[in-house]
Length: 128
Image (cartoon, rainbow, N blue to C red; front, side, top):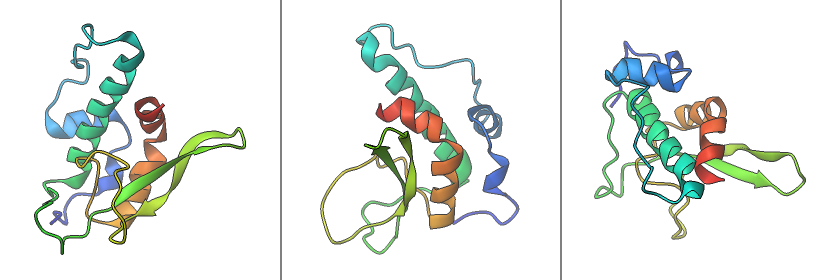
């Protein structure tokens, strides 16, 4: 699952994730052919993919295995005017719905909470 010599909390930024994965953080996807209103969301989806890859440290979700539990940060837009933010970590077996991309999950609820809190700005730019 995860290597014991790696502390996921060492990834505090997209740049940290890129350094761990050997990716140049200045080379972002070229979205110039995409409608302008969707460009920032797509770039932030890429950033979140890299962040999850770095933090998951080799763990890959197996969606053919229903016994493998997967955790997702649960983001919420607050109607009270306080904006977008992390709500909690969730996994769910009792209903069918899609809240995030399948690449944006992790092996542990504590890790999902960390990602949701630490990378809330990237989530906001992705979802909103």
